[in-house]
Length: 358
Ligand code: HEM
Ligand SMILES: *[C@@H]1O[C@H](CO)[C@@H](O)[C@H](O)[C@H]1NC(C)=O
Ligand SMILES: *[C@@H]1O[C@H](CO)[C@@H](O)[C@H](O)[C@H]1NC(C)=O
Image (tube, rainbow, N blue to C red; front, top):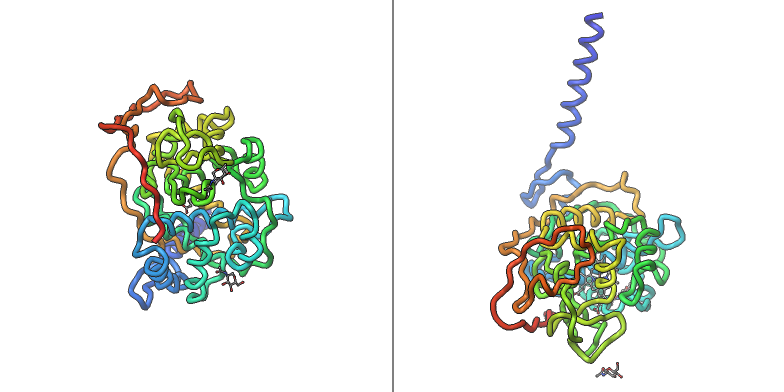
């Protein structure tokens, strides 16, 4: 009896230490880096290639922004009910001539052109390449989370069908239905929109390419969640274009979709909760991205290579009301949630400069 119990204890202890050993095992690659799995070693040279050839030496610039957008447009070509494409499979890169014809993929051509020659220098599948590029590009943005990266997506089999990518002209019901069809809750949809903190529009108004969605498009901060709530007064370019609503700042574009999501009872409290809550935004964005970047994939066959993703720089400053704005200009849509206290920058209202491509 005593013996039997003892041997059980020993087995459990042994089992635990064995699995711990497996979890903490590290391999040292020929290139010197230490990683979780030998298969991940091949990724370090690809990370360097991406930084040199695509991201202008680890910048959070237009290419990094577009690589993140590309990951979304690739992955969202998926339905939990089937029949809508392979999800995070790189089909947008491999079948670019089909998917780039879709209206919602306007402006995606530039990042495909930038990524294709880099992709061809690697042995990665299109899906692994697109989703590694998004993780590395995002890591160049101060304040961003270090996104998960899973390796081993098979090559894409078919192009995604049209009408899987939400449009800025869509209403909230349509947008939330599309996210739900791909497996995302309204809260996760809002979390994913954190991406618009490192974003600009080229094609919504073609007369003003590179017009950012917030005043800090090079930092992954919560400024987007604040600025979308500010009273709008102007259109930054050639008047009102489809998918755009009044913006609070010259040089800044407000997407209609961001605005209606910020005001809708189904999403307004999730939106407002992220204002000035960097930790929560980063946590929720990281979790939602981890789900997005393996949509439609058999995750049991993927290897966790997250430790090849560079550590993002830290944010140095808190968010602020742009000069001339204050609490009075906030269009509160979740009155039950206290609004954080935020300082105002001194001086006259700014004009936000465009994000210029390199
Ligand atoms: C309701 C859903 C969404 C809509 C309607 C939407 C719409 C748009 C539009 C219209 C643009 C500007 C395109 C242009 O004129 O060049 C844009 C840019 C961008 N979007 Fe979204 N988006 C949505 C969700 C997302 C999600 C979930 C992500 C990523 C997780 C994302 C990441 C980006 C990024 C990073 C850019 C900037 C690209 C650049 O600066 O080159 N978006 N989005
Ligand atoms: C699109 O994909 C094809 C391969 O399917 C490739 O040859 C072509 O260069 C890609 N287009 C761009 C713009 O990268
Ligand atoms: C400006 O907008 C108007 C109306 O939307 C359009 O007819 C015109 O072609 C636009 N101008 C330019 C330069 O794009």
